[in-house]
Length: 91
Image (tube, rainbow, N blue to C red; front, side, top):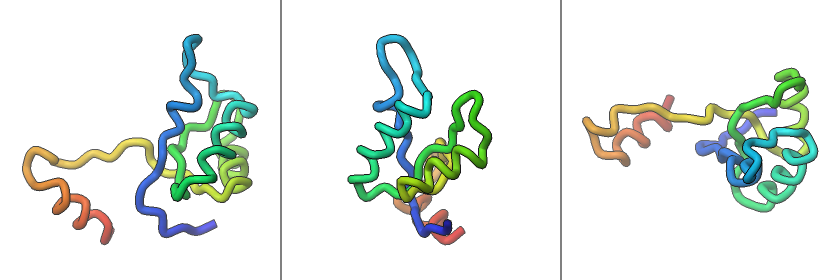
């Protein structure tokens, strides 16, 4: 699956509970079904323990998502945010 998604969503609010992170497939399925109603088409790539990367990609694809990095690093202290974002959209 290819995508022109520019921004990914980290499903942290869906998988973090009072007991800690729950990256189980049932919790991810619930999260992804809710996130699928938003404009986001890319999700933070963080396969849960016991799930191979290819299986995680398949799970994402079931909901129309592609995996993406969870963090973006840039020299925000050196240039305006819009300038950094614009320059990286072309990469």
